[in-house]
Image (cartoon, rainbow, N blue to C red; front, side, top):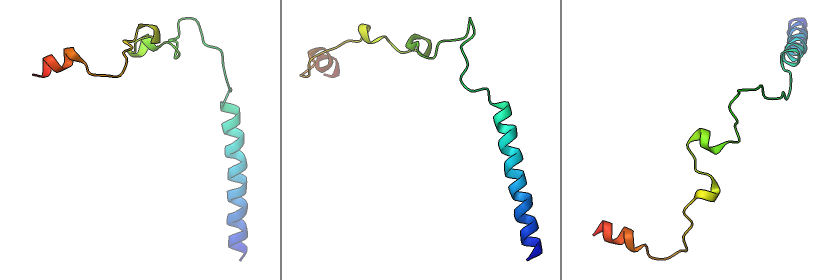
Length: 69
């Protein structure tokens, strides 16, 4: 039984030490440095801006049907 209490104590101390080390290494939310890529820029990931999308009404696509024939 004493071994179990010792093991529990070691695990508890290890959890506290790991938590402290994790918090010390984490700096939280930081501002972007100049020159860093913008994660909100869709062009950086190959996407097209919403304003440039081809918006069509639902219905038959004559060009597609001609191409598939």
